[in-house]
Image 1 (cartoon, helix red, strand yellow):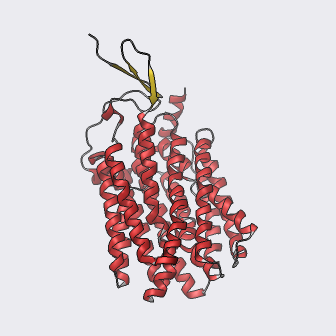
Image 2: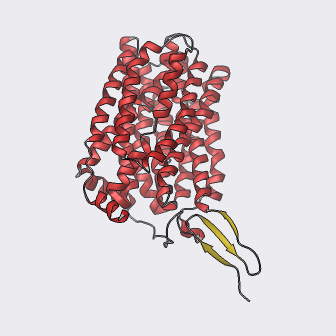
Image 3: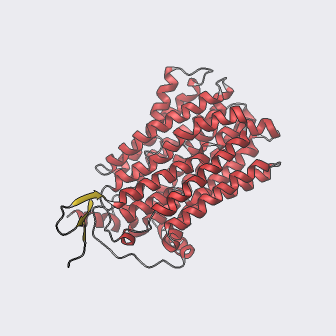
Length: 441
């Protein structure tokens, strides 16, 4: 008697059972993508908190904004520097194990901060532990999942997974702001730890490292055997960096993405709330505006992924950076005690543009660097976070020195104009591009 037969295509998996009709179900790749989406949402809890803690910690402990900004900058720098190694570790040990360990590190750092009494402890718990843990779940996580599980719709999936961070921001920014306002910063740290731990069971039981683990082909692709675990993860990561560093496009992408990080995570996410508070706006109102950025970030990033599948990624990036720079030049004039229509217009626009840069940047890495693209993008992301770290620190110092954030807004606007020129300088030539053309032919 014939047993059950399973047929797999790029879009659905069909169970063929003698005497019964075929019953299609959703491809497992979309389930893995959904788990990744939820994991990134859970991870957004600890990314939402630093900007909300600057004023409370300054008031509670008397630490300068520069000291607090330094802890945030350590977190952001380690987030970026861990990312490329995380991609290699996922190749070596599997996605599930790396992400579970990362979530545990974040929970430990957030919980330990409840008992801190000195600024060096903030740098240790939030800077080191949370930075390392969050870095292991950086964008290289979504790149690895996308590259392994999807052949078709990669731009769209990249946009959706990138938007997950904005979705988490939408959920956790108002919640954490309310908790800080009503119950203090310690309660908010505990909330972050619990959010990280809550995601662990989902990752362990529903995530799979490779389509071959469940006998499937990637969505829209051909079935391939699961590769053997890659040994020498750290050495491979460094080797890929040295190889990429010998190419011009790497430095252009890394430099422009550093400016992207400086003008988003380092600037708006870290300093928008205290800057608005300087102008008399309530902390909860300012945090709600950041959450609104998250709403439109989802729309903008998914739409950017759709555009990336169809248009020149370089030109998309140039438009994104140029418009972002112009908007930052107007921001100091929009600050006021109450929320008014021009500020809402800025928030909507900035949300649409926030991480719209990610899908085209990933596409350029994939086009240029092929199977090493996840690790290369990890290094490009490292530059993103280094840029964010510098502005998180220097923004706090500028506020201490000048008594205002205005100079930081203007400088960041000028940097965005520079980023627009850098991405246009990435030439559409080379082996990676020829490979794309050959495939298209």
